Length: 474
Image 1 (tube, one colour):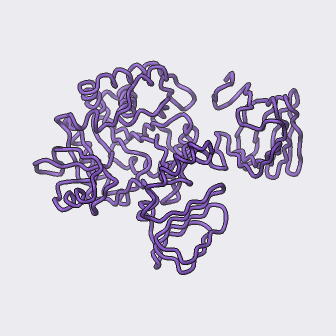
Image 2 (cartoon, rainbow, N blue to C red; image 1 turned 180 degrees about the horizontal axis):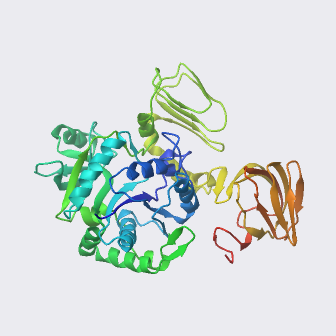
Image 3 (cartoon, rainbow, N blue to C red; image 1 turned 120 degrees about the vertical axis):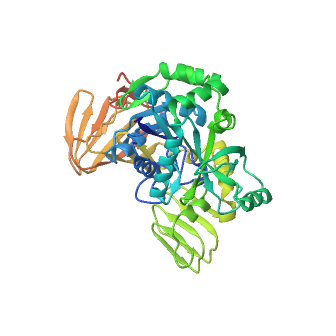
């Protein structure tokens, strides 16, 4: 029996869920509907498919350490984590995963799913996936069509052809329709929402890609052959991969192949593509509100209110989204949440960092939170995981004071190495080579006060780095 490889596509930015989701920490890495992140939920869901082995995850370089950490937190070792040097849509991403799967099993079957979807009925989905895998063994390329319960204009549609059994030939893929057309689709019963999930043999997908988009296959094959292994990751060659054009699976293969099948799926699916869809995916209270975090309300109905760092209070609100983070607050009517994407584009165009970064920035060793800043100073709280090690580095323009407030730190400063306990501090002069390590078993928290003429994150010269980041000899 061939192995079933879950392929998880984790490359999206999720800008419509700003300010929680940001370019450097997008929605698939967040816990939005349960205690697990959306990526972790997807991994666990696909793990229950018959004969499934650990997943192949495709992501970009900026998210690699967080993705690896979230996989490891489940007690799973991924079959591979492929790093795309640049986003090229789903057809190339799946081609890379198919090439990797064939390296491990020439009969590999792929179950492809985005990392950021919600499926309420996991068991029913897994049973449907088993059916799709069986169809794939007969050389079919299967997509899941979500049974439509409303005339959604935010989804693409799939029209089924004539047939009998659990799946139907695909007659047509349709772009997002206007409302009147979506209402006709819903009434006919022959149209499904396009889920963006697929099942096929790796060899069959690559054969069809070579037939209908040979330039994509050629570029992906060259990029995969030139890939390099780096820690837990497979780095796809950038020079070759950027030659590949951007294209979706639908356009590149599924609309053209003669063997596309649609398998209807009614499992409480949502792509969580906006705040209103996240609201719909979560249980509401008796007033129709979804409340997350430290929230107090009065005379408020049918709202989503989310707090991450402080009390959020609302009075007399109805059908609104209110989301608070440490550095930004969003307030919007529920029927205008699709415009959040345009708002984020405006923030990015203005040169502000809030489109890409949270105030707390995650690193492979832990995170740092920018607490305060002025013209020539900046205060951060560093959180270093047990065993975490910052790079051996120096700065040309800033000095740093470190105060340990929890745990113990091993400090390197030029030729010295010493331990720093709670309530102890030290000073790192401009130009000094330095490093922080957490040798303990509890998280290490350090207050860092930077002072100098320039405090940007690009004033870092790395000499050694345990995580293979750029600018080091590692």
